[in-house]
Length: 553
Image (cartoon, rainbow, N blue to C red; front, side, top):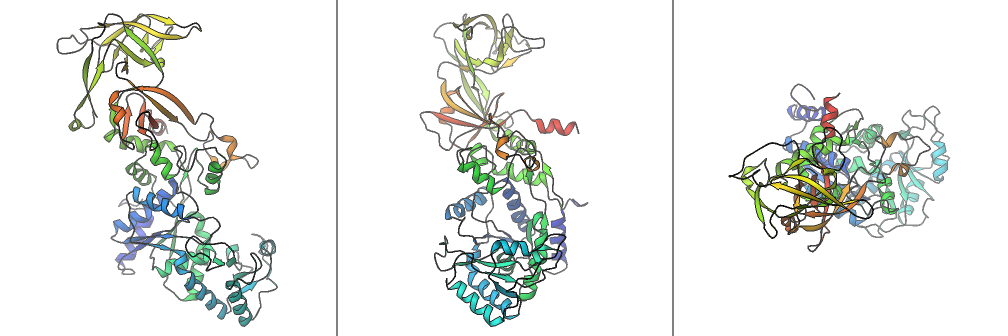
């Protein structure tokens, strides 16, 4: 950030507008439709759409659909849904396949200028011929074919005369260039596979580097924003535009998002789904946008995260705790409060009249008094968390134990007098008494050190609750030893399923509505739950480790 609070990309855009270089800016978000978007894409979406919005420009959504083997309309649809869910809309939707004819004509233009040739070498021969960082490449024996021969061969490639891998079209640049991407890169390869949009009209498909910059130019993208690993591609991006003498789009790079305890590789995410390590692309443990949505993350929290991460010029790893902090910040303002018991033990209040019921008032959300209050039923039999009772507690244990008192949140003070155990010696019921003077207008307020949550057995509803944790046990998944498999670090405790008791009002809670289970965390009803048996996903716990870690640094 500079002194005005701008990042380096905002400085560039502002300078370009002030100098009159552009009257308005156009950015683009260009995903390949070969998988579902993840949190890294969300940062790029927020950046591209956010820049255009801030400076009065527009953003195109363009699908880089140049590899029919891996792409599908399913991913096209999911990407559009994710962008809209994040709160953005595009000026227009384009596809690289919209430009296949133009790209083909431009390839012929390079051939006519003596800057492209058809190569008969195998992929392995081409790879070996490129050389290394320290050794120059070797020219292909087909590099000096005549322009006329190259035109005929390239035309026959399009006509489907040749088999997959039999020939490629390469740019003729410099086989000794220090940037290995400039050593006669491949422009087209042969793939006899039906395309999700163009069907069987094409059997040659452009490579990313050939399609990307030219697509930007066609759309007159002023600021083509990519992640940092594409900085070595920029000379090639510029070279193509210069040789074709077309609109000079320009590429800028920023640091990609790396997140602890997370993998971002589409290949690895595909493997997690295919191998059954997760239930699907929208598994709430996945870093995909649809997975985060199902887990209960909100668009606002993800946009806040993108803002807090900022725009950097060097790669770094962001603490997953920051993402969790952002969703807590957002949900604390809007989540409705309820009580639920996830690991229940029964409590019987022996001096409370049998058959009697009453109700207490509790805020819907103390952060927003305008939301009003809710009524909580109270009766002789309750459920509390097993973790809120210890038969033989240590010092400074302020929850319930034999002979001690705690306050039931919003309710009375109770005291445990005895326990009932089963044949295995496990506690199955707590026998308590309550102090009827410890709440209400006629009561006498007195303080006790512990307050616990509870649910009345009368009217309590059963629900399945899924408790999600980090999918991996290793914080830096990109820095694993070479001999390690990333799947070796999958957290065996990343998903726990429990049967809980919840307040009756939660039985009608709509899916996607964020709620707080008091003292436990933020939850959301799963999109696939059923009215007769609720299924809740834990979004995040109430404990905020990220803020604590920041204060210690």
